[in-house]
Image (cartoon, rainbow, N blue to C red):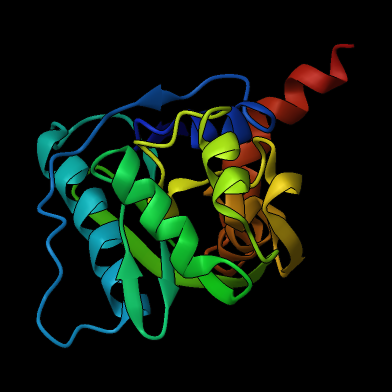
Length: 208
């Protein structure tokens, strides 16, 4: 079964690269605007599903059986979604608002298993709670000087100098990075996909 990752995120590419020998990457085009009164977890689910549907509609009907994997990760506090910073000052403001507080990272995963004209689909979410240290302005500017923050929701990355700003993480660490592996394996099992998805990997391992 062909694996398609619907994401341009280097973090998701790296995580999936540790469990799959090869997969195709397609970057879907979707409107990621937030609907009025939309709850953060509902937003993540809707965007993740939209990415999967965009890829599905672009594939030929008679294409080989495939598993489309899409995901959306958001940072939220006080019921509000914190997006990617527009610039340095915006990034400073975001990290200042998170300083000394606990916020949530929510990732939605959509698995769309397609075989010809038929398909099966499931979307689920994982939530982790991250507590930031009380941060001085010098801590924030120093941290931002060490990472590429523009493409990161919440203006930070736990895997990049996270010890400077993060006090604790409760929940899945891969979720905080952008792709919760525990949830992914659980969903594959629920959809009876484990054998089909990992058959090629097992064959390769048996040759070693």
